Image 1 (cartoon, rainbow over the protein chains, first blue to last red):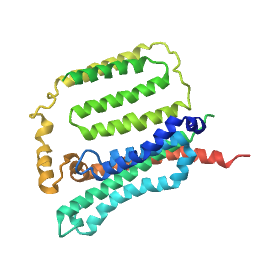
Image 2 (image 1 turned 180 degrees about the horizontal axis):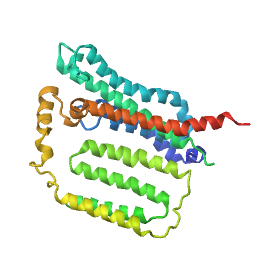
Image 3 (image 1 turned 60 degrees about the vertical axis):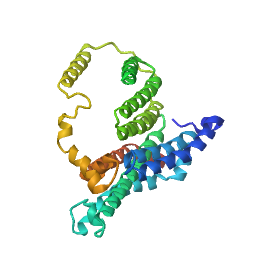
Image 4 (image 1 turned 90 degrees about the vertical axis):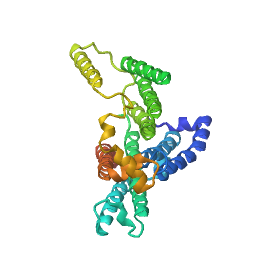
Amino acid sequence: MLQPQRMREKVVLRVVAQALIPFILLFALYVQFHGDYGPGGGFQAGVIFAAGFVLYALIFGLDRLEAVVSPRLIEVGTALGLLLYAGVGIATMLLQANYLDYKALDPHDPGHGLHLGILLVEFGVGLTVTSSMLAIFQAFAGRRHD
Amino acid sequence: MPIEVLLFAFLLVIAVVVARLRDLFAAAMLTGIFSLLSAGLFTLMDAVDVAFTEAAVGAGVSTVLLLGTLSLCAREEREKPLRLLPLVVVGVTGAALLVGTLDMPHYGDPAAPIHQHVAPDYIAGTQREFGLPNVVTAVLASYRGFDTLGETAVVFTAAVGVMLLLVERRRQRGERPH
């Protein structure tokens, strides 16, 4: 699927991709952390963040992508996001509240606890989605005709 | 209203063209365009979060994965004779779905059951308890936090499944070069 030699020779593709990728990643971070106030959240941000890396791999090749994010890192990220989400639930239980009852995260200010909890679980979702998308992309794109 | 009619007409045309095309590359690109138009429709229905997901997943990543799969198989669909039974099954299912929509409440009807159940509590509670403008985020992360945990687990499981099926095989092949 990936023909980096051919893609890299296309100046317009390369220059436009290089210019776009930082903005795609920045936009993903905006969607991630502004999800409480505007449209978006962990799922959307995760996919957009992964799309930035996929674009990079399409233009510069899978090897260059694996140099930036190794398959090992992606495996860890996939599990870490889910663990973070589940861990917030465990943390609230340790604070003697129900599972995923975010208000317990800040006993003095329940509203702040709610915001913190939502921020953390959304980040967990984003991490798992980004890593999963990249894992699936690498698995598909890494296969050869045979 | 006319822009919705236009988008739906485009969706219909693309669906028919995708079903009839033999060139799989063109079909994959058209499914991406289908998703993008759906995202436009969702935006018009004020479902911005859904539109966002549709544009990013449907038009973006899915299309890339489809193209990736295409590079591993033939570019043209083989000519097949028209079979009657599948056509009948699809026709009957489509007709049943159409009949089902007749009983549905009209779009945006405030008396619809979905707007009577827990939705008013969520909308009022999001303002009162969270002070957040985005009700979708409050429902997703807090009111339905268990569901979202389950969904994240599904995404995780999908990634693990793909890794087990595809990546492990690749590594094994790399380990026996002689």
